[in-house]
Length: 422
Ligand code: GUN
Ligand code: FE
Image 1 (spheres, rainbow, N blue to C red):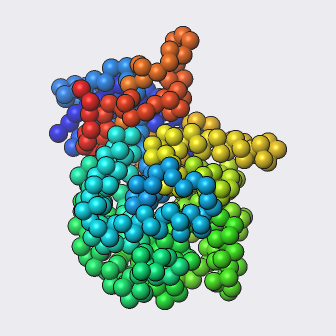
Image 2 (tube, rainbow, N blue to C red):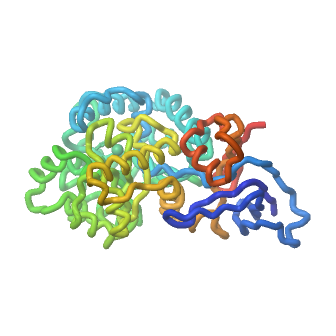
Image 3 (spheres, rainbow, N blue to C red):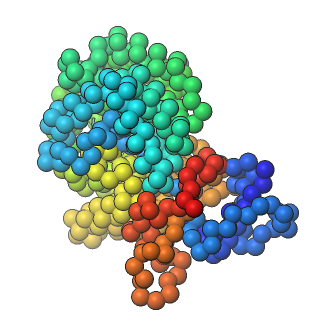
């Protein structure tokens, strides 16, 4: 079925570039974009039109790193560095997800909030619990969130008796979980928590499973200096943190590495060579005092950079808040670098929070023909007046900084309208 959406269309096909079509037309056939037009082509003249008036039609957001079972501790424990924070707050919170009924309530509310805030694609960590991971996938699917979810693997340095598996349990449960994943829009991704959490034997098994089943991998990399020193002690044969994943076949195309705050030039070159994507999580980096990621340098070196909320190291679920945090972090980096590096513009940060993440799932640039539609509709009429008539670009900038879920009037995910007000 053909249908047409009309409104002010703004997308980011490339880093720093916006495509803007004022009161344009986006044509869909069975949820697949046929094109974006300033005048409706004659062939579509009889198709039904949803006219969003003066509202903005933007790309939806891709949150490429967050921990679903940390959602209950959002905004808590922000006074500790990573390793203490994990032991004191994160592990006990995640342990509660041994109960799938508890998980159901938390995950339903998380999935609803993601859609309400315009996040339609995710790469997410669950906990180590198989049943609750299925519950998470089910609740995302129900709400209209698409993407990847990983049952976490951790057979050492967790919380023994509370949140830790044996190696054989971890492998067995991973296979049971993978075999039980039958969701249309939410797929499994292998998720060794980070090198300190997984023995060499477990990493070897995970590398084998990834190869046998053709699975993508997500984990953490070079987030915090104490963590890096610990990894060095655990793997004295590895000159760099990234090699501790490579050793086991887990460093490959589409491997997703959260943070990379302290990745040096050699580690960044390894990312570029292998098609590994970095997930920059600016709120988390400040909250748990990890550092200020050199994002501009990564982009200049052609590293694939995406954005993540890193709930609950990050305290903000909405990706428009992560986008503005990335801009602020890059300005802090410019200040620290004595202005030798440029900070991110709004257009650039928006690209990182949208197209750069959507690419992970095979999408093209901006509202690309052939892609299933991932979009939000934003009513900015209740934002401060702005002191005169605003251009579309000015409205866009203001929306990215000031919007909240109340401004999002419709959400399209995988070609379906999954939420609408009115
Ligand atoms: N490294 C290992 N586990 C975690 C986690 O839960 N959050 C963050 N930010 N870093 C980690
Ligand atoms: Fe994380």
